[in-house]
Image (cartoon, rainbow, N blue to C red; front, side, top):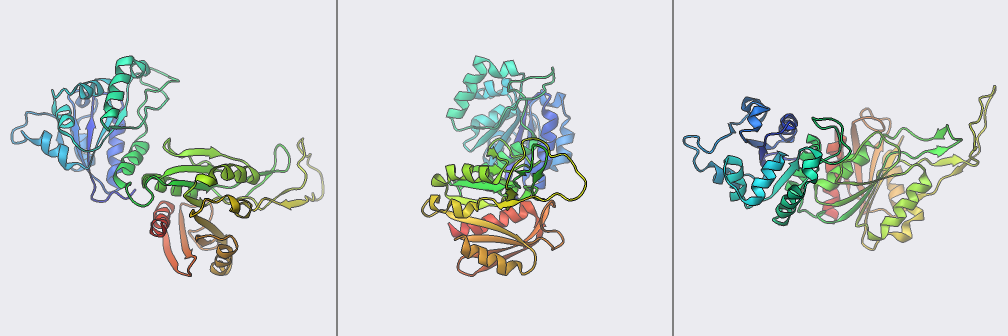
Length: 397
């Protein structure tokens, strides 16, 4: 996330999820944001203000009655580009919905004219209760944004219904989207493919490759933060995408092609970061092939050429970005693929370069344009590479 210099206000109300808010401050600060923290009296019973002061590097405010800060509830409410409420307890949501202003945080919310992001956190039955649902609907109608709650363990035990506060990383992603959207990708329908595919030899063994899916997942996250409506079609991967991204899991290259074909007619930007298997067994055994002495010979057939097979389904004006992981003369091979597949951009990297390729968190790429221009991105994290690629994509829109 690129939040350098962006100013946020974190409102913390009294719930056990307060400990997660400490992690949230850390994540926002790591992204470069300036974070002011306001705590309710109940919140200070769970986490001491000094903890947030140490994490934010700024004074923490807890009262309307501090000498010399009589108008802080108005000033801070307007200076913040975004107010994030985490945890947003049932009590805080009720008071905000009713327009009460009986402490510093609710006074600020009443004086607020800019965006507010709330992360509800409470017992699942409290979240499901009619008054809570009514208060959330009222706040949403006034323009508030919500993330979660999630399903998971609560302080009182396991639960299979919503109530648990979303994880700090997901809240930070939603905050970033509110701050970073508004550019060329805002509202665009973006489809990203990621990860490998697997072609079955038998019910146990497969042909696949070493793709981890990291690059595709980072691209999907970065596009979503910029305001895009993102669908991620992913082969087998240990990576996970947050709830804001529509994630579709596939196994084989043919399945990847079919799921992609369903979405192409409405897609504005297609980013083909997946690494599909190029070959599949000609015959799939229905039972595990027993190990035997000597060699085993497999007859292989080519898998579908996804970009060629779906070319006729591309929406008019759709921007198409391909990837080429090569070894030896990577740029020439990438340029040939750009032309052969009728792409607008292709991202080329050399699998033999240290720090690039599969199963690592970094990459080194060259982005080749249709008009022969070339944008080089030196060694960086795949998250940073994703931002660089999307900067180029937005410039093309």
